[in-house]
Each structure stands twice: as C-alpha cells, then as structure tokens.
Amino acid sequence: MPLPSPSAPPTRLDWFNNAPERTALDALHDICAAPSWAGALVSGRPYPGVDRLLAASDAATAELDATGIGQALAAHPPIGAPAPGDPTSAREQRGMAGATPELAAEMHELNLAYQDRFGQVFLICATGLSGEQLRDALRARLDHTSGEEGETVRTELAKINRLRLTRLLATPAPAATTVSTHILDTAAGRPAAGVTVELSVPDDDGEHADTGTGTRWTVHATAVTDPDGRCKELPPLPGTVTAARLRFAVSGPFFPEVTTTFSLRPGEHHHVPLLLSPFGYSVYRGS
Image (cartoon, rainbow, N blue to C red; front, top):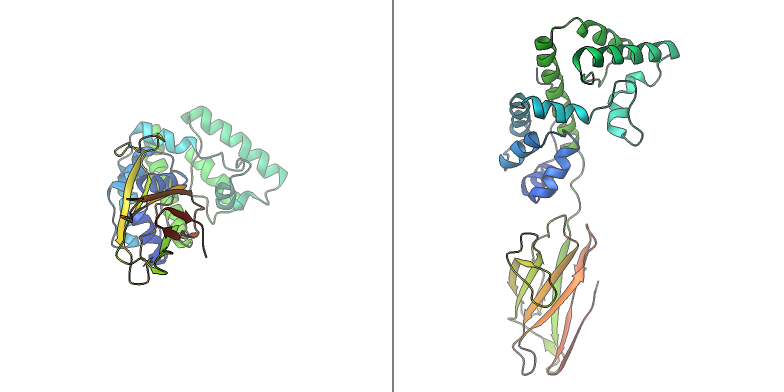
C-alpha cells in the first residue's frame, strides 16, 4: 500500500522534530484535517528519519475512527472541482485539468451518485492519474459495499497523507527567527563583559506573569556576554512568536536591570544592542 517516497532534506525533518507543537500541528492540518492524525504524529517526535515519520503517518491513518475519517474527507473537494485558492488539490487533480466538457459533466454526475450512495466525497489518490482513469475508478467503486468502500477510502487517504507529508518535508525549512545583543558601557568606554542576559517569549499558558503589562513570558534562553560584550549564540525562537523580551542584569548604580520588549519579523535576525551609562541607557535594532 505505501508509495515509494523520496528522501527529504534533513534540515526540514529537523525543523519538524523541533518546531513548537502548535506550529507542527498547523502544518499537518494542511495535509490531513483529522486532529487525531496530526496529534499522533506530533506526539511521536522526534523521528530519526523520514521513513519512520511516514510509517507513523500510515499507522495514524489506520487508527482513525469514523469521526476522524469524516474530518479528513471534509477537507477534500470533489474530483474535478478543486476549491478556488486550493493549489494542493488542483495539483493532485491535474489529470482533470484538460478534461473535455463531456468527461467533466460525466465526472460531476458520478460524484453526485457516489455521494448519494455513500454519503461522502469520493476520495482517491489522484496524483498521476488521467481524467479517464479517475472516471473509471469512480465507476468501479460505485459497485462496492459500504465496508469495501470504507477500507478503500482509508487506503487512499493513507496514500494522500504520505505524498503530502513527503512534499512538506521536501520543501526548504523556514528561516529561523534569531536574536543577538551587544552591550557597551559608555561611561567606561568599553564593552560590558560578564552580564547575564535573559531572552523570553510570550507565554500563552500564563506560567510567568509580567506585572503591569498583562503579558506573560517564558524564559527561552539565558547567556552571559563575552569579553566583547556580545551574546551571539542565543538559540532560534519558536516560529510562531511575534515579540521577544531581553532582560539585562546590569547591576548598575541606578539601574539594577534593563528590560526591553520588541516586535519580531519571522525569519529575520534581530540584533538589539544596549548602550549603557550610569543614569541612562538606549536600545536599538542594529545590523
């Protein structure tokens, strides 16, 4: 049943293994709209190789109950009628793109007959099939019993999920969103070495409250500035965050700490230096 699957670049598999749960679930929803399928794949991370991830997809599809199958089918348009703005289905149904008006009309009637008989959309792994092959498959499956068709639908869904997952893994990994900083002690005229820097991201779970602003934060990483006053190795941020906070434990005579919050542009590097003096400071986005 499983289709041969090309290897995916390791960087994309690494991205999937390490992406925030919500980011990974959103990516998988575009492949299969059954939440239990996506949840099973995310809970199985990390995967040592693409084959293991694809095998997990097959297993999760095999475990879908009637509700899960229905959720998955609801996201698939009828053959020959991909929804506007749905390039995935249009690509998979390319065999119908050049169908004659007669063939298109026949497919429409067969789709209606199938939905009337089985109460669901006709699902088939259409990649590489011509319009005539799709029509013939639909005709043949109208003779199935409900049990036979249920098993066929599950098999076809597993093929589709596998192909879509392979395609996801074959695309370049999203660019990382990163932060660095550099502290200059303007009173001493030199870099500020040995300063603890804390990088935080908004916390939707509300574990850490930032009093006064209502925003809740989770510490993402802590580092200490090097002899040049720099923190260059802070880990990449989760792909879904749109803001970050830096807290500098400067222990100055007036400022025991400095905190700055700033917006993020996903996929970009954000260098946020601190210019520090005994009774004032400034931060800015550097290069």
